[in-house]
Length: 141
Image (cartoon, rainbow, N blue to C red):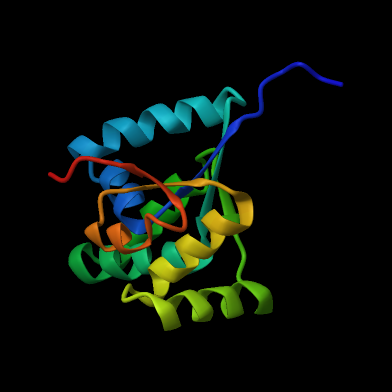
């Protein structure tokens, strides 16, 4: 049996990834977690639904070229993109039915439950679900 401690597992939401990409104050903490993941000391998941959310925000605000550049950056990060399948959709739908948060955020909560992980966010919507998942709060800019 290994005596190595288990790596911490995190789920990024769109707030956290955007803070990192845009160099915001909260992005500093995200950078630290990314360094831990690169060293094998943490594991990070990011839902494909939230990936799409970040893409449309960047394309809407900064154009298609910037959104494509974002893909190139994100795909190099030590993040596992969590695909969306039937079970994850059903889990998110169940969460959305019981909590007043966005559908994309319901996928974050579902992943946190699935992997017994901590969500990295500064989005106040997650205060509604602190009783069912662990949240590590990032500063709001």
